[in-house]
Length: 185
Image (cartoon, rainbow, N blue to C red):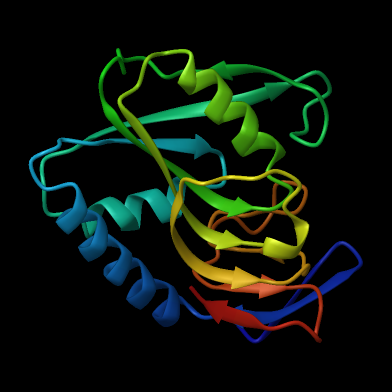
């Protein structure tokens, strides 16, 4: 698919599935080397991370565990006051945790996730994100260790990311803007 339309918005191909797979393979190798003999816990932030995390852990060749969390907010969006981290479902005390995010935009949801996890006496927390928008981040983070692609302010869908619940299933990433670029980190 070269272009798609959702409601009245037009999207064009931004990052194809081949590029995504190659970058994830490289990230998986780096994580496997760093975390050999550490049995890390990959903690995926739903809903957007599901495709990325599934493909990422296929590239991890060391013992690890997986869990997922979902952020809950007062009116259903992560842009508002986030009040709960739902679903960890395991004891993370003393563990090495890798938070898996589809995209880091403002950093609000990541900040909340980090604060919630830091209260659990975790040994080490790092972040692995498929996409990051450095120009949009409102918080300082020193533990974003793995980023697939740095992008500008464009609005993206596909590969787990949605617009009004649509397009999460697309294997490629599409953007609404035609003027921005992507960079490998």
